[in-house]
Length: 276
Image 1 (tube, rainbow, N blue to C red):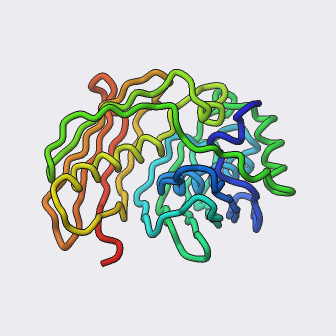
Image 2: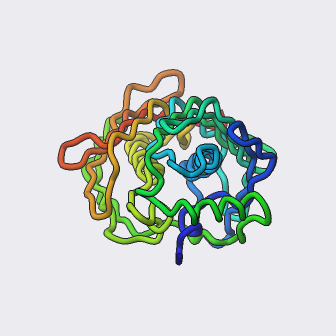
């Protein structure tokens, strides 16, 4: 299967598993990757929720394009660190899964996912039910070998306009092929929404940092995430971040991604000095 269960898989072993209700898991970030963005913490929690949801409905469907009411970024995760992941399902059936979850690093909370909803689509459109059922058995027993993930590359972001303190634009060129498509997904490749959101956040930070010599702000909260369409290989996305006036040390950015003028994703990110 090549990069399947390696290039974009962030669950090593599942434990404390109560079918249809909750689970805990671990993932070791390889020390050889250059970085592990906070959006990949959200991806790891979401993947754990997907495993529990798929198993609950006997691998008839899988959640895709999850909507998150709120994501709290509490600390960064570094290469070489180990994650403790947790999810609790609020409801799950063949139509959708609702859940919340979190990620800890070295016993400290790094990320909270609040009020997430993942619509279920037929699993056979995206992957092999037999392969996923077998992999789930491995994750719940001996676990997957560590060090499988080798980082993310293969796509290009072209800078656009920059108005410091106000806005920034860029163009994201999704590759025709990339290792992460083997996990996301083998039968229907889709550019991961978490990678798209990460680039949108970076654009907001670029607009903010171009306007001040003050303290370095970081994303602390993302809200109202809506992924409205799949992004296939080869797609070109126009990204935009628009900043609101600072308030109480916080800067808020509205984020959008469009393909040929059609809205693909929207979100809001709050940026602040985490050390303050």
